[in-house]
Length: 170
Length: 333
Image: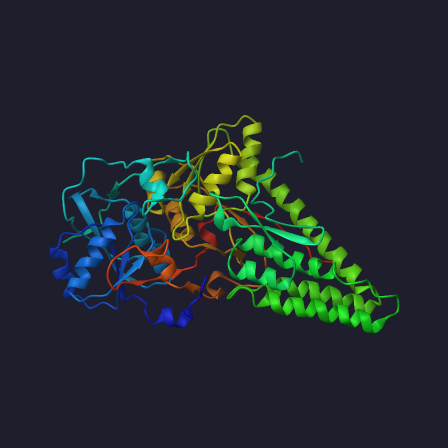
């Protein structure tokens, strides 16, 4: 375990200057992103299959934008340290009541509400797969390697509905 | 108390001059203890994170007992030899203080050094005084933790479905065992806890060992299980506590606490009360090397020149905690 020499004052300099991306965005989103003035682009990993971060990172690198990957459980830290100026969620469906997004969006919604950070929604890359729930092995494996005891039961929601009167649709 | 003990509850044990430390990095695939015979071995075990924070704490305390066990007790009145024992205690403390970057084992080693100085000042045998006090301190921690297991089992009610994160070093699994004995029907949802999967590897394993029903979820599913009312309580551990009730815990805990507040789910935290730190904002950040996040099994998880960001722990403000379940152990000799 190696600790880096990053201090609170280093993070303070990054206050309110980063964006967080979550989900599998349509390619047109990344051309929009190129016009934005941001310090860092945080990309949420997107368990179980990491497809969202793979898609986002590929598109960002194509446009010479540097992604910074975080695990799904690290978003809260960014909010707590006030690093986030806005959040973008990829959605499958949206209406006046809220958005049907990739799993993890409700946590981001709750954090955004607590920290008064605006949430923007953009269409996802493709229509969602039929399954709303994944298989146990999707969560008991990581990169095809077992991470849990053999008979462990898994629950793998892949999408969730996020009520969001305050979401901004782009 | 007649209770089945989880191996993670007391992962370091000293017997016959050998400190056996459970290698938690191998669970659930292998169950193996590392034999530590000296301070260097103890420092290596801590530095390589073979056991987590509570295990490291036990290693620190037991290393003094290990080294004192090798010293012949000085004759009564032999002040020079007593000073040598004090010097040995100080040297062990110095080495252990450097074993883990960013964590104040010096708070713990200072207690032992103080005992040694107290013995010298009082004309007592340093070795016996430090040994008896350290053993007594360890025993009182053990008793208090067992008491907290009972308290935890009282908080858990029949029909509860509990979300947990990371690993609570035995106590939650043992509380689950007590609940099972009391015929309470309970289940657990365990957040896997990236990047090292302690939730998946350790917590699922020990809950299942104790006969509890555990369901593994990805870290990003905690909001979903709360909003769908699949869980009705959250119970987590903590690394450090502050005077105002804030705590630090494994990264991921803050967003669980925020989501719990958002979805009106009670949030319980096992804490170690301390006045040494005023508030959560006084705890320095710990940012770890991104390779721990971006690589798995020595392979990159995402192609291309991407950066990573890996904060080691979260701060949970006290206003998000429904109830703390503290443990308080006095160091008074």
